[in-house]
Length: 341
Image 1 (cartoon, rainbow, N blue to C red):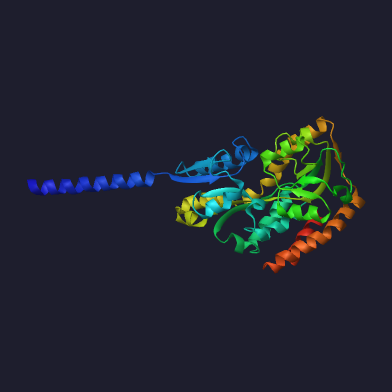
Image 2 (cartoon, rainbow, N blue to C red):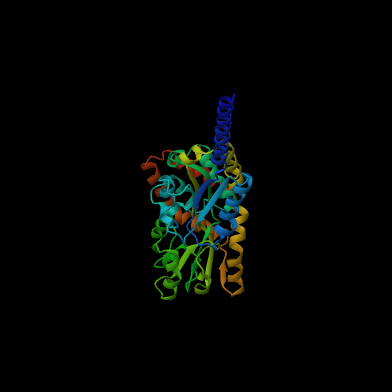
């Protein structure tokens, strides 16, 4: 009897130990790394990435822990965001399409002149292309959480008012991506690709005549160096938030559901109000400084559109030559949507 009791006790103790081990394993938090390319005090971090990460933690009851890595870390390089997700170095990243080279070339169609009228509808249009499967191939290695654009970029110059396309000829302008560089070269401007931290110094030393960017830019101090602002919807940069697909698929179903609930349509819908919020301070600062904001009338805008159309047509043909066979139809669909707004 004593031996039997001892065996029963050992079996009971072993079962309890196994249960406790299982409880310990299940209680281990899911750790995710999320990177982006701006600084720790940037609007991306403060208003978007940190709140998103903390809300994911809340919705999973603390089972998920998200480490946010920004430009202050080795994983904050703007050119590496998609690659480090694909390689599993980080789990999630927010990146700039224009810094990715050829990686997301089909998405660049949204960046052409006069395609985007504002961030809200432009983001919905880009996300719609993905949902329709038009962009599926170039994002096949990722779980796509959101695609979005900024409010249209303007032309900001030091001393030269830009009222007509011809005024751009010979101006040295910093550009955010190759799409904008192509447009500027078409009209005789001299595009320059500089890192954000190089721009203000280049303006001060007269190595640049101006920049092409939106109001809500992370380029601190550019308002102090520019006096003319031409409000033409010249371009809009595209951005992505992507996750490593294998990592996403490996997560428990309820964690995947929490990520999904914070992504897609719900997340894309936030970018209109967010960009309006991010644009306002620098726009208001320019007004307070007495800068001149030029607003071309309808006739002038039509001249801009006509002058840039050959460049856009050539760009669409280039996309077609690279296998984006529906590029013309997609471009015309985007333009028609913009014209209705």
